[in-house]
Each structure stands twice: as C-alpha cells, then as structure tokens.
Image (cartoon, rainbow, N blue to C red):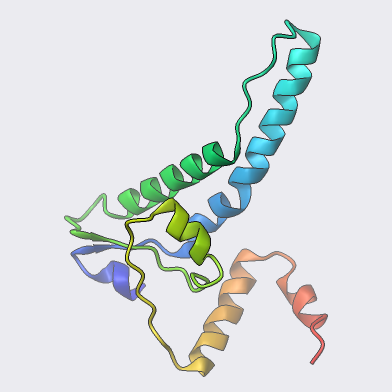
Length: 136
C-alpha cells in the first residue's frame, strides 16, 4: 500500500478494519443476549447492557489500535485509514472521528474495478456467487 510505505505515514488498509466494522455490533448484540439470559438464571438484578454509544466507542478504539499497530515500527507523524468505501461509510467515520480530515483520491475507473474485484474476492467468501447474480 502506497500511503503506508511512506515513512511518516501510518495507514492500515480497510482489510484490517473490515472485521471490526462488521463484527462489533454483532458481538455486542450477542453479549447483551447472553447477559440477559444469565441474569434470568442468577440474581435477576438486571444486566448492564452495551448500547450503540458503547459500540461506537469500542469500534473507535479498535480502529485507533489498528492504526497505532501499523506505526509500531516507524516514527509516523500522520495517521490515516485507506478505505475505498469511505463515501458509503462517511457518516460512521465522521461520527467516530469528528476531528478527522478526509482526502479522496480520484483513480482511473478501470483500475478501481480491477482493485475492487480483487478486494472483494479476498474479503467476501460468497463474492463470486453474489457477483453472478447481478443483473446486467
């Protein structure tokens, strides 16, 4: 990744963040469900459950930790996230990082399609079958 190759830049790819973005809300929902069940069979004092704000705090921490980990072996001055879907996730990122600045780089659309296809093959188990179902 070009940005992360710069010695002053720490910039993990979205591949490193995709798991957290997708799973943190699901994890907390499962946790809350288990806490309710445990409370039912134990003290019945009412469980302390996670809410949406807690999910945002955990996700923000995971992203910050991933960026910091990418800077572990170099004296980075700038920190970033390389996410080709930043436009669709803009609201999430702007809420998690209200002080952030967003830089959008415009690429040749042909390169974007090839890159997106390769990315989706890597991160989505059912991408090929889903892609075959697209009506053209």
